[in-house]
Amino acid sequence: EAGVAQSPRYKIIEKRQSVAFWCNPISGHATLYWYQQILGQGPKLLIQFQNNGVVDDSQLPKDRFSAERLKGVDSTLKIQPAKLEDSAVYLCASRSIGGRTGEKLFFGSGTQLSVL
Amino acid sequence: AQKVTQAQTEISVVEKEDVTLDCVYETRDTTYYLFWYKQPPSGELVFLIRRNSFDEQNEISGRYSWNFQKSTSSFNFTITASQVVDSAVYFCALSVLTGGGNKLTFGTGTQLKVEL
Image 1 (tube, rainbow over the protein chains, first blue to last red):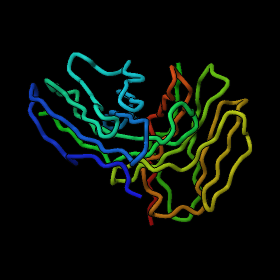
Image 2 (image 1 turned 45 degrees about the vertical axis):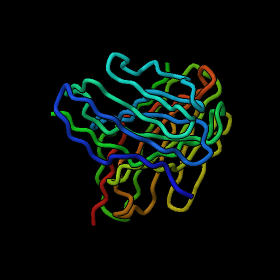
Image 3 (image 1 turned 180 degrees about the horizontal axis):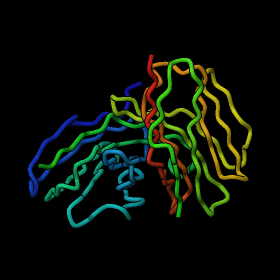
């Protein structure tokens, strides 16, 4: 079974530039998450999708971050414009069944963003 | 609000030693799930175990064991006879049901280094 795919693996940009990350979840997984993991910290939830609808984006900095999952499959996370503090690993995760608290998440390898 | 505390930032052991990783959580919900994930240098978070709030039975799986105690809000993880391949960052996480979806809150992680 293919895992969660993310690209690119690494990205280096200058502050105020724009960047986009792509995620393709495990086939059939209805729930998709984007997490931000700053060096030395645990992952922090940015946004959760259920199919193509947003369930939770309370911690997404909406002035510069946006995310979409138009067809309920793959998703794109964008930062515009980037700040130095956005340097982090951006992890995508998916889960097969929505609404069940105990279902485990499957994670991709992440995109490591460096903002200079 | 949910909170997960992993007080141990980094632990170093010599191969074959036993090591326990501590996790303390906070939640007002009576129904919740606790998880342990492993993050090797490759970056992908790998699911290890899940335990729900109604099941305090401790579990052993090979060299891994988990001790869940609701009275102290702790969910500790022990590796017996550690190996170099166990070197990774280990995250404890708490999941509660919020607004139709589940939100996974991570601790800050414990870096485990197993040396020869």
